[in-house]
Length: 305
Image 1 (cartoon, rainbow, N blue to C red):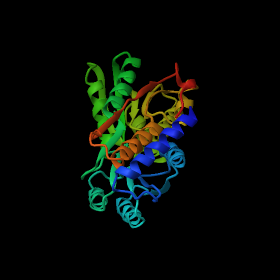
Image 2: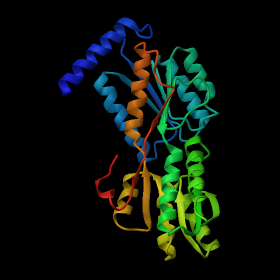
Image 3: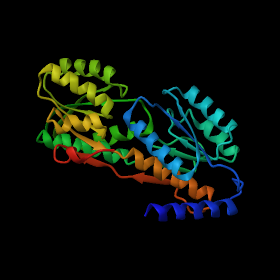
Image 4: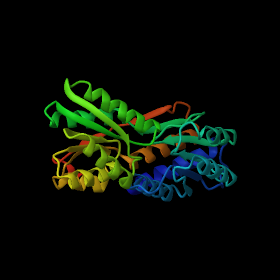
């Protein structure tokens, strides 16, 4: 099967070289990807999948880490364009703030695919999780586990579109339960240490708190430490599917569910969309939503990115 796939890939690349003006026949495909951060297993696994794909294609890869600094991400994209990349895979740290970089890339004839979070400007394709569904599924799970009754809080994060959509989905789910009351929404910055302090304050401020939804697993791990330190019976759900979170769920901690995303699939599909356009496809979708999946004690042991 691998031999067949490599044969198909070689034929496809040969076809691309003969039909697409973006690359000369003797050029090496050059792919750039800028990440909003790399201090996160989610993006580490995405990078690993991208490196595997680039090796398979014989492509050159340029990867940068913005560290949640939009100015750095703009500069990183400028540097990539100076290196004559053919494809830009963009994981924006600020959807609006990165628009100038998208426009620069398009002006240079580069194909731009946003991955995980969309960006303003003339992006060719956006590939990302169904984040509203993820927030909805996770908070519905939490409400059901509470028997449809009790006080809950949301541990919010950086205001990028995926996080905003998760919170929107969560609130929509909680609104379906007359007995559930949302008593607090605070920003944990999707960071374990920040979330720890934030959730400690939440717990102290709300004596009847029964559940917390975190917008990502990084924040959830800080929330879990705060819950365990308090000795209170507070249930925790989240979004992502990170290995550490899945392990905590499998061990029967107060962390009872995470709605998992598939970062490896996102970047693979994103690269596929870019290659299709590079090869001259005219009907590539503008958006490709990727399904999410509930991971709880029933399936945590078998789940992994």
